[in-house]
Amino acid sequence: MGRKLLIHNDKVPGINTYEVYRAHGGYASVEKALKTMQPDQITEEVKKSGLRGRGGAGFPTGMKWSFLAKPEGVPRYLVCNADESEPGTFKDRYLMEKIPHALIEGMITSSYALGARTSYIYIRGEYFYVARILEQAIAEAYAAGWLGNNILGTGFSHDCHVQVGGGAYICGEETALLESLEGKRGNPRIKPPFPAVAGLYGCPTVVNNVETIAAVVPIVNMGGDEYAKIGVGKSTGTKLISASGHLNKPGVYEIELGITVEEFIYSEEYCGGIRNGKKLKAVVAGGSSVPILPTELILKTAKGEPRLMTYESLSDGGFITGTMLGSGGFIAMDEDTSIVKNLFTFSRFYHHESCGQCSPCREGTGWMEKILQKFLNGTANESDVDLLWDIQSKIEGKTICPLGEAAAWPVAAAIRHFKQEFIDIARNKKFVDISHYDRLNKLVRA
Amino acid sequence: MSGSQVHGAQPFDKAKRAEIAFSEEAMKTVQTIISHYPEGKQKSALLPVLHIAQAEFGGWLSPETMDYVASVLKIRPVEVFEVASFYTMFNLKPVGKCVLEVCQTSSCWLNGAEDIVKYIEKKLNIHVGETTKDGMFTLKVAECLGSCGTAPMMQCGASFHENLTYEKVDNILESYRSAGKQRSYTDLDYKNTL
Image: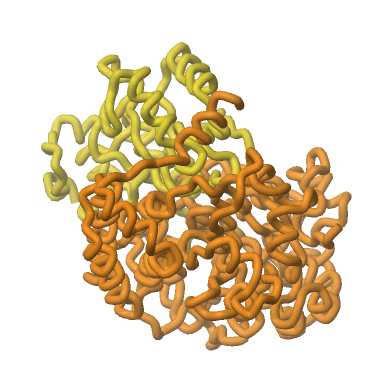
């Protein structure tokens, strides 16, 4: 059994309530931090822990915190990015719904480290009911004296609020999120200045993912060095993985970074293999934006080494033969799955979610969706594969925010690894969705 | 501040605008939300307040409603419209009492979302984007709603309906129909199955 630090108590009845959470050692990190540590010491522990941003980019959290500007007399903010919208990702929802106090505790401890008097949890609007759960937890935390003025008599005061979004993937990009939090359209800002210097209301701001903030709790409790002992190399600690697709046991799993991909897919402790005795065809390992890999490359690197669930191992081979850990949105597809159709659902998604600021993304995502629609209609030509490649190559690196790349990478990877599927459809002038019968079976059986 | 400055597809009705006001309870919630932000930054409350307005005033944001929200937050009507038209959760046209949003992105598609959409279309005799004649249901498709491990799924108001089967869809539609009330994202009586 792997070690769990974030959702080890998820099956405890009533863990969503303050009493039960507290009885299981909750809020110990706030006590320890406020009573025995200086704010900078916490940042040091987070640095030592090697914790990397769990939202997708994997940037070292301690370093991000140390960039925060601290001019006199200017408020600083901590903003939690709970705008979880990357297709294939639902771990933050699970954590917030099951153990809301884990996030609130992390918010208080992290805010103390950063010197933030006020923090906001920006949660995607579709998770409205989860926002209710968080609001309830916040009210309980106020009542118990963990939020408000002069917490634990230490002189540290903090307020934490939840804000719901309006349904826009782009607001998961940190500067778009800040715009949205200010009551505007979610158009990403040009960086620099980075939020650490000019973020919310132009003030120094740290934006961290839900899981990242929740991980600060065990780091403060056990110490950064102890946390860093878990994992492999620069991939330290545990990570929540959202497993979905054609798996026997889809769901949210907390893994120690460093287990093999094979173990994650096939062991009974985790996903329990592929449904209906089918073979695995491909995996999107870190949310829709990361390159899709065929079975042979997801289980083993190009060098023939077992592929590990770590930042480094998954990206081994670059984008030619590797992928990324990303947000941990792990989508497995069986042998009957049409890669072209799956890619179409991704491209339709990015077209829908492009904010429209930058032409390469606004227009490119639309063209990619249209061309893929031609494949599904059976009207595509072989040259359309090259056209698709050409378009994706002209988006990457030419936009304000990474949504452009996120839209381009899956297209590039699908063509790189499954080009024959595109060509076959173009030659036959016909698209047959053979995975259809399996899905119907599941619907009838369930 | 008032008037026809909101440039939507819908006409602006001054008489209707004069009748719009939050209930006392809703106004209290709005004031609480505004208090979460620093002095002068009340515009930050726009998204949450639009959700409340949509729930209060018939499930969609009419030009009159948006104009009213602008007056409450002391911002220009166009600042409301540009936001309302950006985010997918805000309806700028009238909708049915229950808006069914079926997720169609990868994991949901892999698990039969298309079949669910077709099934609902046939059952309700409408296409995606349409509303039933009795004004009860509007069918929409949505992009990833964060329910990939429990696919296929659909959202209605605050409720997530997951691991859908045809039979489940039957039961859900029946329960909404017999309750007969408008469903909103702000509802407190949500159901979820995670």
